Length: 384
Figure (cartoon, rainbow, N blue to C red):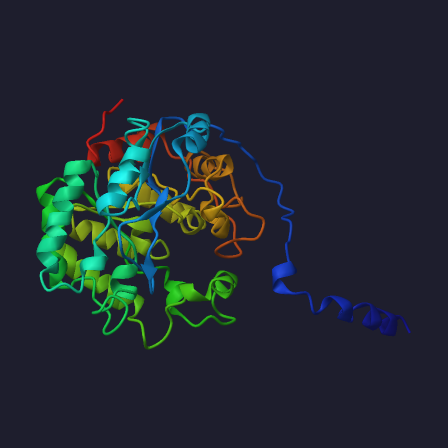
């Protein structure tokens, strides 16, 4: 009779067996240290933010010159002042007249607090003399005050022969060679977003650790015959970098390889004209703290601080990047403390995967470089 009672007690509770994954929000029972970091130990250059966006987008490719402004300096400066952000780099400043507007609204309105980058003139790509037109656009961007060039993942994943039709254009397409060389000639670094997380190139199924993220954003999936593989895109990137040793390439999101730091290290070792930023990847770095700490130790002169911050309301769709006090506090905690098992984004539901992160506890000498000095040297800004 006793064994029967125990058997009844161990039967699963059928009323709880159908809990939906999106409703599962476990609270950790781990009693761990919590070290709030309200302000960073050194002034910060956030080298990766999006304050404007090209309005006309065709099939994932930004074309035209008009820009949408996400926020004004008056909206951003209070958070920047509270969180010790000396300068913010707006990567998606646009081209032509849109770029000029972005520079007026930010760089000229608050000198020293904002810098703006230009983007490729994809709207001209179908023109037979695109290579020269693009080189001319880089010259114009430099003349009006752009501090660099930013490429979104459009190149390699969206841009096609007729902008939105025909064959995909590879990252190493020679029609962009004049653009890379023009950047070198004007001393403008290229902030390069190529490919995406490895999980985005795998089936969105029960084995994909970023299932929830991809289920919420199915357009972020690049699985299928219509797209090249992650490895193919990165190989094209490396071929392109090898052809342009005089151009400086900052590889965004830890080179879109934070899940494979050995591969990122091999890229940095092979190409001395490359750097990385950590934007939107502390979720990956923080779940491998020992490997990440070794990476920071070795490449401390080639790592940029960045968040991929997007002001609300536009940033509400990407909570891991929402511009707010808490975003910066999490980054500072990750870099400065040895706290264990904490959230990597200002959102209750994990935006990337169901894991937590661990702090690196970097020493002051490395923190100063990552927070400020590496970006200041790259962008020719005043040092401390």
